[in-house]
Length: 124
Image 1 (cartoon, rainbow, N blue to C red):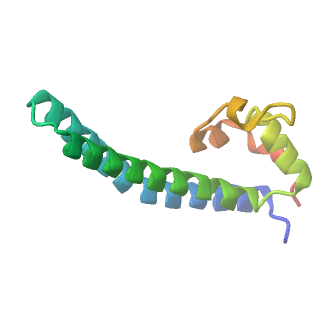
Image 2 (image 1 turned 45 degrees about the vertical axis):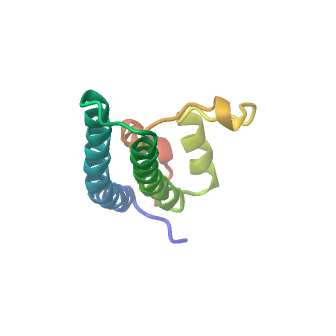
């Protein structure tokens, strides 16, 4: 992989974030809508076991699609980093080899933007 300058890195990561946000926003809007439908079914007393199953399945499907969009952006970003940068990224995100996967903290994709780009140096 060709080494990126800091400006190139920032531009590429911003583009990844922008694509992720563009794909996630409509899914998030649909998810909120489905949650509102479920709430209304309960509020109106129209909930049945079949409606509950259908509504929660629709919500789960949207949650899975949204999570896939989010994690795909992580994979795309990780591909830009060398081994040292990946180690630093993992450390800054709170991952450690001693933690089991279920014990690792979950951070939103936006948390990458709270990490100074200088923490990923050296760039050419």
